[in-house]
Length: 245
Image (cartoon, rainbow, N blue to C red; front, top):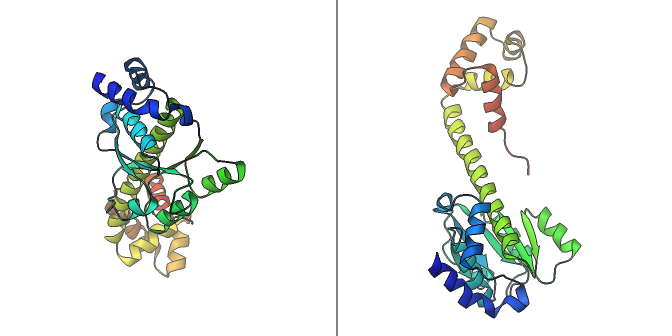
């Protein structure tokens, strides 16, 4: 910890006057840890920092090290896009004014490319319309410069937690999709109709089969999906529904 604090102190004074990034002294670092999630929970998490200011990139990397976050830094949007990015848990911090691409356009390009990591925007030139555009584009936070250490840490940890939750949901969805694929076509039809609120008699009428056959398909579908109750069955169907754009 002392070594990390010393590193932060040697890098950050270069940019304090412009960005108001506070010194990461040993006391303040321990305070961050007390206020945030346990450091060990951040193992495997990567924070990507995209900003053309090398001093700021270094200061943020040192800051995030105090809460156990690994960082990767990029000077331009193109550098990130050509870095061979792999989808690991974390988030992306983007400066709104990059030398090769507007930060909002960069974020849109990431989304189009299938990069779903939460984004924290930062700028020294932010205004209300820009903030609204960033939030509508899916940014989880927008920090105007100068910003304080704790504001940045809070924003990044919130983004990381959002990513964790999204990955958990996606993992559950993937498992349910695999189970759903094991159902016969008829069982899938029955599941979708039953979980839409229709009674067995109504499902039978819609599909042109007997009510007894409907009950058999329903029971088998619930078994294959791992649903113990109708409530479980309905919840699974909700997770399987395609996301609306």
